[in-house]
Length: 370
Image 1 (cartoon, rainbow, N blue to C red):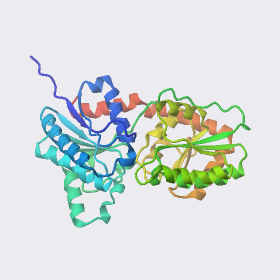
Image 2: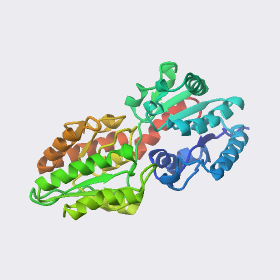
Image 3: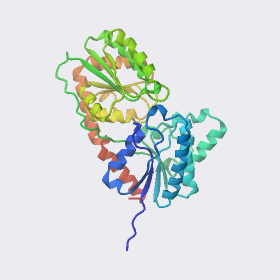
Image 4: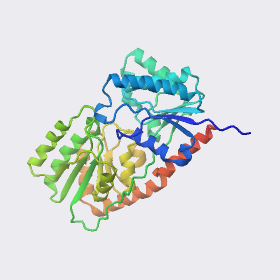
């Protein structure tokens, strides 16, 4: 009588809060074929981004509960997939999951990284921290980055044959790109991310104010929830200046899935000026919606957006380059249409949810786990 295969234990959060790692964990669970192989430990510590990095006694208790659950469930698993963060404080917390798997002699432990390794600022930290990070990462058997470009930033002490990329893929619900029929209609530029400082929204707001004075029929809409160090009061104060000057610039707060679909349909292009990024889900969603993209050339964004074909990539933090790229795309409706068509086609080929699932299935099969 054949024995049933042991499941793969996926240790990661699902939304809320809404961020890339949570979205893709949920995508894993949405696949009926993969779901049959998974045992999921939902390591959600916070329900919103604003409190995600804040220490509380409740989080300490949750960490204890999660470690106990990992210890119990990993024994019945063929492999464990972890989602370590490269935010320094969060990395220390996630390291406990890695060491628990090592102590329990889990047969195969996979690190699935949704951040750039540079975010850890590894070389700038103390010798003790560097030693701890090195030992922790070496406890993992495989290192899966969410974009090919991100593999180049992984530290040299990891065996290169065990560092691979599995690109994210995501299908937004009912996202339909706007059909551009007249060059004289109002052009809508969409910012869609959270409102943490590292996302570059303040830089875009500065550029938006300049461009709205230059173009009569131009609108910028910003959507995202306050995150990390940024408060709602600070955000409203920043946008109050533009509102006072009568500029067509609006902040609409957090966008749920239904609103996002409407935003993608209304927008003419997406601007993503992030200063520190891995492989953002928003970029993939915009491609599926047939939108051109102006973004920072950081992390794995260049793996998704072909600069000059699907949009324009600029150096992160360069407001002059961002302004010129936006000006070019705003002023040229046929170019926007061509960029959008290219992105929709590339999404269908490379970044659909089915393609994402197939890549993970092939990886697991190669390990003998499927």
